[in-house]
Image (cartoon, rainbow, N blue to C red; front, side, top):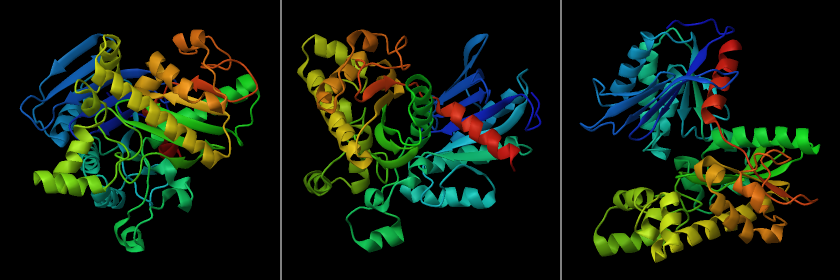
Length: 409
């Protein structure tokens, strides 16, 4: 592998370091094609593995080191020996950018220090993001590295949307406010939806009122007005908002005091349970996977039925509430693993949102809107708002941001 001129053809290394995993892909920023992708799992344990996927197939290796930094360095060293496209730059997904980072930035030592300082707002994610950046810069020092923040898209929210009604000192000294997450996905999907609606329906993207619902194991929804985020469901951390696979979503904070008093658990231990042992998993007592829950609900399992009902009810309530920030609705845009593939979940959501003028087209929904006009439409044709499915591609957006910043450095 060789490094390429920033203006030439090639791929961007897109790195996403999670709390216990590392994802990496070589992405063509023009076509979106992946020359390679890999996933490192169970990092930090003796069972750590890395799965490589290329045109020749998939293979699994055991990394020489099991830490985020060690595993990523191992992967990058192996990539340098492969016959792959030249590299244009390295794009890093970073969860928390605070209020400083309103857009993607080239990484230098000062930016890296700021990302590390923001770890207090994202203790499960930013330290892993920093480890990934350090490892990649050490192996590929000749390339420009770019940070693309989950929170940046939401920095256009007005103060009335991002402030909590808590003591002002908490906000001014500790940064306690709503930041939002999934911004890379919301930005990509809302822009793509605007393109489709302008092309197929003659809509003006500068005034479009969109509610974008990213539904997967993690879930969030955003009100997008003329391409700008004006409100979102996640807050200071990814724990606020919708019910998710293993996260509780909205919760009365007094619950922490009650559980701590009854169990002797620390706040950190309770928050960990709210992140990893709650949501669909807790409600069903079975799984955080919607496909499993739909199968079991069909067999009459009461926990699976309850989990799906709570999930769709709470999601619909949040989606409807976001129209307040928009003053109306042109389109509900569904994305993420569940949003793109969950026919039954989408049907249940539209049933609860019928009062907004969203009436399901069952045939279009069954085929995920693939042959509809506008593209992705899953509601009946008419003059009112529509619902549509738009696949997300966060890695492609990160690759394009990276090339843009490298070329205009």
